[in-house]
Length: 607
Image (cartoon, rainbow, N blue to C red; front, side, top):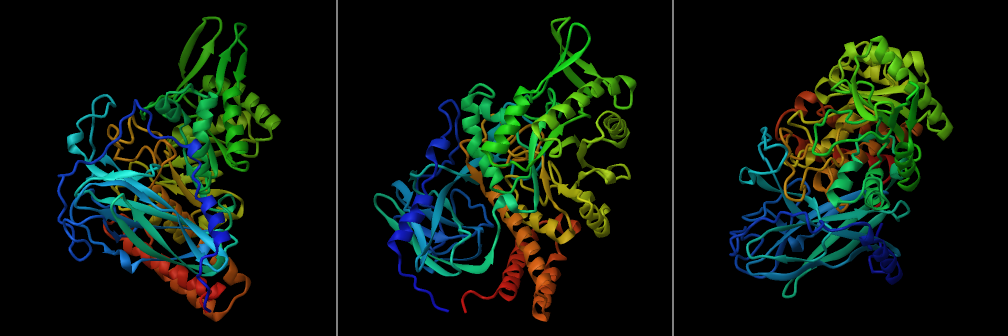
């Protein structure tokens, strides 16, 4: 079937309105925070003559989203005139990457607003300059001094930040990647869309034709995705970085676009700290408790939930996560120390208590009874989970016994190193990807049948697949496909925004691999790795829906298409995923198989 690609003025105006970034909701780095910019030689780089003319003016080529492009030097790119060709479902986000360079300084580098048209339907193209930050490219441990970022000479520039700046100066010999994003409306007409994206400076222009095929299949809104995404939030880092009072109106104003960005990836949990430092001070910022524990002068206990309530209400009502689970950390901290205010002593007390002891049970018993009452009064009891993080069974057993005694209605979520008989019964459990095979497909299906969640996680390990700043971008998307291939409900990662001191300069922090502490950047800046992680979640949802649709209206042709997809997904195993150099090709083959199955199961929109 042919489609009229003549631009429709009304649809272009409407689509351009969608491009109006909420500039008021984002901000550049505050003046007191530095940002990194690679140095260049001041002369044209020896760039591939097949694409660029060395020493010329503004030039550009088409790259791909699997590469992090170096800030200087030769690049393997396709000619801009060949254009960008993409394929998407309705409701899907798709991305591309281009790169520009020049032999002389180019002032006011910018991307003109672009719209792809198919008759009366239009899809805007969002463009973000890729900014560089420093990181350890080997993945080896790199220790700095007391958490202060120094010794940057050991680090290398990595293109990861999707910047909010709209104009830059392009220095001679510098490469500037540009990330392109198209959010296909759920009500978009299927068919072929076309348009031109233009990159300009005061003295040059490069045009990139863009073609997008929209298939006759629709993804639901992210809040309806079934993929269980659990990225832990740390709102304290946002207040510290921007130098605003914790839990102030200014703090919540900064949090809102950042957390909406997370919700738009299908986030399913709200991270809460029940007391001071449940994770034992592993990151740059201290984590204060969201609940104040108060021992009264007469020996009774009182609890102030005001911060906890404000945070959960904000995430539920203002961010739009009204059905998200409320994960409350933790009955088993790494230090086994619990902080409270003693009114009689007029002091803050840190008490060390071991799960399984009478003292621990009494201490937590008072709180759990009151906390359960409070959650019920707010209508949050069914959403809440008491959450644990990689605690040994000896400690978990005592905590679970206390919970069963004092608040049996409260369910548990836990990240675990290895599944055990004890942790296999937990309502929401997440093993490491390296031990995920210890859950059999039958076990995963049985847990899902009774409403239990089973996800997997990566953190400071393994080295691959992961979402470090040095990780090949395809590894992030590979993780979502791994979940689909192995019967998991989703993915957990310990840090969404636990920023280091100056994340726009470096993503390294103490012994953690670079980028381990966060996936997005200040000023509501996304990243290459976060967008690719989101791509993997969309892949998961596509596979789920294709299987549902084929089951509802079966045919031999549909079964064959799914069988071809399943054959590709067999390669998404932990032993293979731990190898270097396999993820880009694995993801490419999986995406092609998903597209082919979509054409069979939902029809080919181009015919």
